[in-house]
Amino acid sequence: LLLRHADAIPTLISLLSSPNREVYEQSMWILGSIAAGDSTGSTVNGGSGSSSTSSDSGRDKSVAARDVILAAGVTKQLLRCLESHPGDLSLQRIGSWTLSNLVEGIFQQSSHAKSGPKSSEYSSSDEIEMHIVLPVLKRLLRMADAEVLSYTCWTLSHLCDGPSSHISAVVTSRDQKVTRGGLVPRLVELLGHGSWRVTKPALRTIGNIVCAECSDDANQTSTVPTDYTEVILDCNAVPKLKELVTHSNREIQKEACWTLSNIAAGTVGQIQAVIDSGAIPPLVKLVSNKGTDQEVRSEACWVVLNATSCGSDSQIEVLVDEGCVSVLGVLLGEASMVMMALEGLERVLQVEEAREASRREAADSDDTECTPTLVSASLIEKALDKHNSTAVTKRASRIWKQHFVSCALCHKSFSKHRRDATFCEECKCYVCSHCDCQIYHLSYQEELWAATEEQTEAKKNAKKSKKAKKKEKQKQKKAKQHEQPQVQFAESTPSETSHSVDKGGSRMPSRSSTVNYSDDSIGENSPPNEDQKPLFVRAAAVEDEDARKSRERSSPISSDVDEDQEEDHADQNVEQQQPPVDFVLYLQQTGSIIALAKLMDALEYGEGFEGDEFDDAELQMLRQHKVLSDLAL
Image (cartoon, rainbow, N blue to C red; front, top):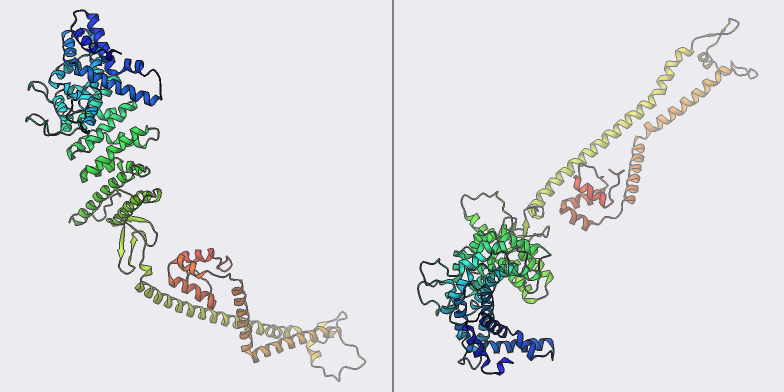
């Protein structure tokens, strides 16, 4: 409503020079409210339309009102009023607030306006004269009031979001006696202020200075630095930023990580300043913590990404030791960050390759020294598995083929540039140090075959000799058994020839004498003597034993044939009891054609499965295949 009257704004500006304290204070407050858009937004919109439309419309109207106020020359009158009453704390608060509203977003608006067809038209940013504003801001920045400090720092952050000449004016001092860095030392000091309302705008100002680029128009004198980030480092701001990474306010955490990421995107010396400050471990902890805010986590990841992409080889090794590879691994799971993460991992792998090459070339290198792998192949494989993007797949595949190999035996991945895996010329493949491919070499198989044949032949001869000795012992045992009854009968004859005496004292004839009796001496009517019955029975038994013994002596080969038939019959029963064997699976498990040949010979010729022919591993596999039972062993 006030803007509809052409004299309203000039009148309010003129009241800033009123001798009445209440008048110039209220006038300053009204101008600040108009610039902020508080009154116009609530009066003009009236709540009609959607919320987003109302917000955009109110913002446009406040920008228009601010331009009108600046065009009317409010800056000089406002600064003069503040300088005239430096002890009035209430006025200083209102004045710093009004200044912040007047310059907020002014340079973003002017940059958009200059890109259009009317770039030569008037811009409200032309009304900001840094040589007039900075002395007042410097004085306000030295005050102890937190509210004044907060608004003053916001004003500086908006000014440093503008052209390079404004930033140059903030970071330099015309007076050589003043501390180098302009207002930066005081801003760094305010990073440790007790109120987050002061810390946040001070941090934003430093962040805008770091991400700005020094242009030629700002470098008019030799005192202007060529890199504004160096001014921040000279003022020892990085340790303060490291402390803010763990601040309780998420906005301050985010701003601190954002500023550190811009510093890490600079030179090697600037990256070293970040490393020396000890900021990397808390950043890695932030990323690893699942409870970290997503925006804070993203900015923390950018610090690691920039450091690994721009750092030197020695710096990257330090970053790896402090856990930066795990941060890159986390980023592989995010579609928007996977390409940057692959770039960082590739840079780390290049450092590892150069390190291993220099170690091999060094004359005094220790071959037994084992250093840990910087990047595991599983990280690259993770990108291949989790993303369907063609660009990601090509990039990850190229990195894997360039830096990793797969063992042909255990199928594990190893670094190509280390000694964990070597290329076998005979097998034409890579084999790791934990696997042995010599058993597949032709020379090894020939030597093993020759040695196995010798052992097999020796065992066969030993087995034949053993069987022959066993048969000879059995024959000797049977011969002794056949000869034993005759010896006993011959020994019993003298005892039986002794005479016996009956009850009446008369002598009875012996049993041996009855044998010599002729058939005629025994009468047909005489009954046989009872004592002669055992003699005939024993004689029959002796006769049967002699007949059997004579038969065995007449055909000694028949008994051996029977024994061989019994052994063959037993072997057939064993073969029938053996289950079918998967020879292909057995060959895959043993990895030796010799072991397969031994198994086939044992099954074919029935040579048995003695422990001296098969080693423990082969016997264990035979048990698994159920070829052997506990009885067979």
